[in-house]
Image (cartoon, rainbow, N blue to C red; front, top):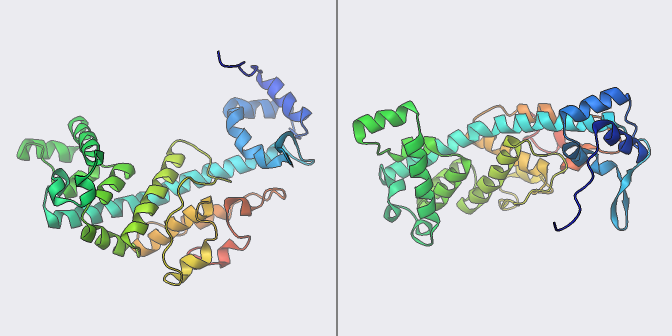
Length: 303
């Protein structure tokens, strides 16, 4: 083995260790019950900001006044935020599917199956071939009624406006990248963006969606992709809202912007959840990358 495995500790010992490091765990039986429901390592992402910061990094000990109840409040908030974010992304995904399928259909009903009908990215490198293999696998395995209809009537060859309904967010993003530039421009224009901007937004929001789907932590997260921002002044509501585009509040603002420009979904959903951010003195809402007065920064958030 490369090294020693960390020592196993029963729930009561885990609670004792937290108390030893300075956390007020409250009622011990309730604390143990909480760790039975939520893995200690999952919760550790929420008590990280409460750990003492030293020159060498975060220490194991907690700041005075740290309470397990506050950690759980942040965890519960993040669960609400994940659910709301996943819900808010759904109509955006459906709208992009519809727009892309419609515009590619103008090029050719089966443009997605012919790289010669797509853009240069589809004709260079192995990316398109891998995408097509995955699409054909999903098509063979699908039990959707509309797929069965096309099997029976058209031999299973789906036109692109139907094919997009089989695509998840990641595959949809790839197909957008393979599309001719004029198709990309038309879809992006409906979003109030340029094609290169929309490409990075789709990639960034795909990671956000995956984080939500796999119960990852949105709170206090720095995201891997920083989306391209539109030219300053083109969208004042966007300029005013976002300071750090790779923080969670920045990514959520992308969602608010797309809901507004595509005229889909509920723009009040995410603001309502952010208003429920718990009152924890040591960890204010700025840990999301939001301004303390986030509601008044932009019309995107004042709904």
